[in-house]
Length: 325
Image 1 (cartoon, helix red, strand yellow):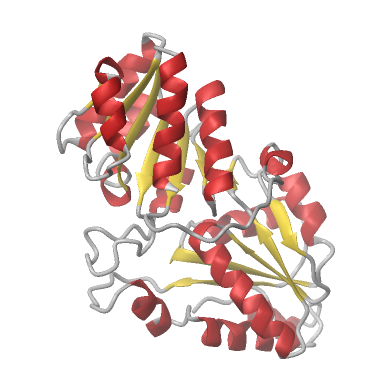
Image 2 (cartoon, rainbow, N blue to C red):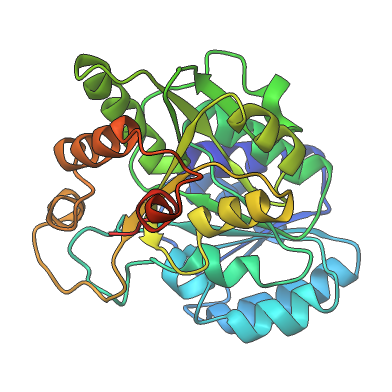
């Protein structure tokens, strides 16, 4: 996904001299062509992400189409003041690319894990948030960023992910979401890496007698509330699944949309607990340990889906509304 983005920006930059790529990380081989063949359009500010955001704001102000690229944890929380004051407050149309979101840096620990970036970026006025789940969606979102510059935060995975869309992503791009699979009992809403886990869980739920749908909410902000609620109202229960701490994140955005529209549907929020992660063993180990493995997710969602206590029953509200791990 990372290479797909870099290669597409490179192709577009060959045709458009106004496109600039700024990278605080030279580790990706896909950057080699950009540096070698378009040196005047490639800026390496050093390992200095805060300065990079400030320079990007100035370049965007002068009419350039700017992409900034760095490891997820260092281009979000570390640069929060620059993102707020230089980009958001000044309304500068810069694409902020983060790579290795969530626990994507495996054993690197809390300095490299990015478990709160959605919550942070959601608070910035005018900031769009996009999370592609495969190469096709990454490519189409990258083209959007080249052709219609805006202040966008683009969350990328380090490893390649299996294909989900088969030439169908473009028709869903403007909506910001896509119902990947329909079901009768419960809808699992997710994005990016966890969307693939949701699809695995869906298969296991099917074996357990639960018919679950899966919704890819790849644009978290601005949230398309009308399309989201139109889809979700076809279900009796909703599960949100994210590789983030629950406070202010992906699930919170969906719950806020439901509350704002006065829609009452039981929601189960599943994500990481409110803590930092020092464990060794890699991404899957941590996810398993904290209840986000396929087996445990299947069990939690099955119990939630088969709980038939009426939502209107006051005694059931605590159990059937927002439940966090």
